[in-house]
Length: 486
Image 1 (cartoon, rainbow, N blue to C red):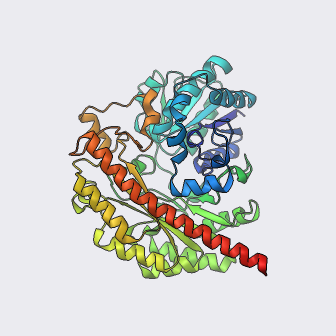
Image 2: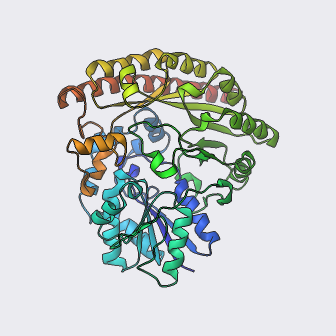
Image 3: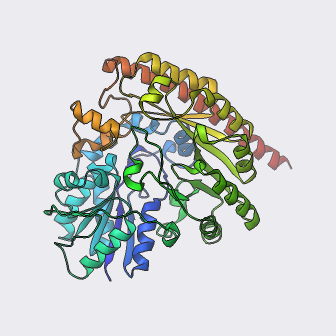
């Protein structure tokens, strides 16, 4: 048996966001390792209070309201992230290293996505210098995309796990637990100093994976709503998205029975009342959804749900069934209001349907969110204004806007590299949606003009978000007053 400490570096906490999702990926790894006979601890950098922010904006319902309307308001106001990321001796890292050391691990596994690689590098270096020469394993989307480059830049890491990590990490920990440190030749693992690599096939039967371990921390440490995955994989090929590198393009569904059983555990053991479905393509398989909603009703579970949608795979019949089953929030990836741009990024949606689909969802009581992105290759000011116009006409209740980030091994990322973009671990945190700065400009506009158009669109979205927030708060106030009067 080995003691394994799984680590999620802090990131969104540094932006003044009080609570984020519980990380399902960590939960799945933990349950799989425990079933394999190992002892697992979890150090979640997103749950600790580092004393970075004080006052009412950072706590409770006000923070949650700000996050709903403008997720990065606090960071824009206080500009904390850069100070933390540029200081390896900051108290944030002291807190994390202290927690990891207290777990007395034989192996440390760190969850990696591109924007947190600055933090991953700092944590790895300090583990080796202050805790000891224990194996450090990196896993997640970034080492999956760039395994050799990741080990080259994060010099304190020993292994990179590519793709789905459950089986691969267990095999690696088993060997390390047996005293092996080199020459392991495990499928899915890139080892420092070795050119040998064998890919690992994706897990065919998702029901074979135990439910994610969720009891490391009290649920109050996380955003309202328990996260749930019903499938892995996405069949679409958007040029900016890296999901397929992790899960593949073939969608693998869990069985309806297996998902219902997990919902019973969430409702019973964890007292969950709201479920956040995190699938990339939840609305893709209509027969599966119809069966799920029927079984959900038969189970007697009383839960509310939110999920993501896709303009070309939803209809009024689906909205009706979902609404009757407790679904009350749905998000759509629109990305652009320009047909030319939508075609160039392989989004594969019919923009002429956007207004009707979102208004139909609104009519069935859904809290609708639309995701848009600026900075697409070849984009013009006219394209961005078409996006703003579509957002206004669609009457989506909420919007989120980001700039294109050239993530490694995506089509957009490969194009950016050819044009001179270079990823550096020390600058990784700056890639967080490139907010309020132009990270790498592939549009037809100069930086200043591009940024001005982005901010113009952002103001339109923020006005809608705050309007929706005020309406929600007014309804809550009415319900509260009415209840008191009764």
